[in-house]
Image (cartoon, rainbow, N blue to C red; front, side, top):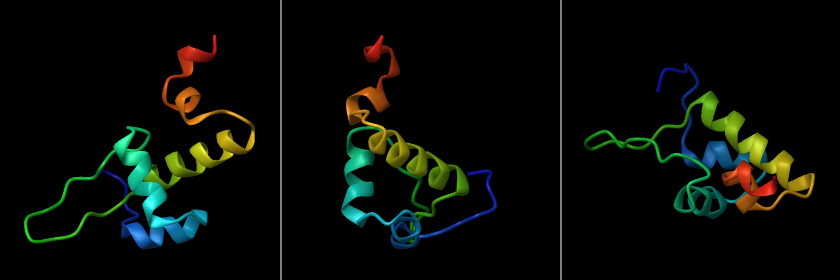
Amino acid sequence: MDSSLKMRIGELARSVNVNVETIRYYQRIKLLELPEKPYGGRRSYSDQDLQRLRFIRRAQKLGFSLKDIRDPSSTV
């Protein structure tokens, strides 16, 4: 990750007012990338991850489905 902001999954979830399991679900369905886990360490999320999560939430509030967000060409 090139971004300077580093946060844990709980911090990321709180910053966008979602549950940690929501983030994990978004990772499973490929809406968010799963950060690499350093050996013996914990995953860290960047400001790019935060911006992506905010985008997903905004798009949902505008009525886009998760499928539409994941594959924008499906709405055309």
